[in-house]
Amino acid sequence: MTKEMIQTDAISVMKEQRGVSMGTAALIAGFPLMIFTAPFGEFYVFGQLIHYHDGARTTQNLVDHPQLFLSGIMAMVITFIYDIVLAWACYIFIRPVNPLLALLGAWLRIVYTGLAMVALFNFLYAFNVANLPGIEEAYRQQQVLQLVNARRFGMELAYLVFGSYLILSGVLIYKASYIPKILGIMIVLAGVAWIMMSLQPYFFRSYDLSWMMYFAIGELAFGIWLLVKGRKVKESEVEELALS
Image 1 (cartoon, rainbow, N blue to C red):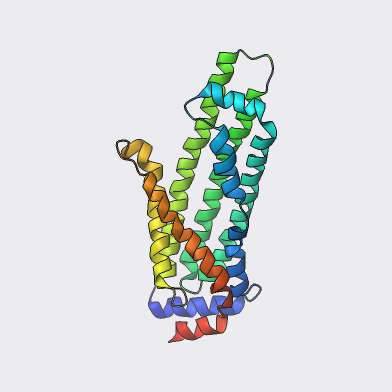
Image 2 (image 1 turned 180 degrees about the vertical axis):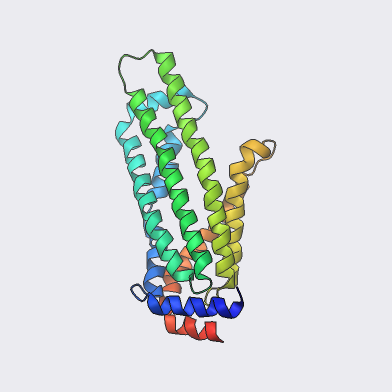
């Protein structure tokens, strides 16, 4: 497909789908910065209660802090539901660059969300096992440990897909004439970081890749830009840039 054909397709898509403006899509995509469901669930709740190498301690935590643990699960459910909305909003905002690749990116984010939701069920099963009466304690702890680690393994697979989504989105952002190119580079680096950290337990065990988490700043920077600058982007300006 030639550049001219891509530009024509992008403009025709924008003209046909005027239901949600790019400015509105930018606000929707940047909105997660205003809520803290993911950090609350993943870091505050699970970070305190889940110990992936200590079944006894994890089981006791799930018994002693049921409301806190369930609130963390609910926070992540809300996060994943909004991820679907986020996939749609980001598609609208970057589709002028390449509608087909933008759509592929949206589907990658939806696949990631589905995998993450399935993985989260393991935490719910672990909670039920921890609080189920009539089970021999050593067996209970073993099952809880297996379930919480099953969630961790599931998220490693999900983050591979999420990293791929970020790399594709970063390339499209870099090519977008209405978005600073540095943001595209930062998003690509964030995607590479997620993939590398997901593969670390299998291929890079002797290396500490935790420092790569700092590349996630690219996602934060793009979210801030969407709220501050992206909401001001007009379709008419994008069409003029596509034609130039």
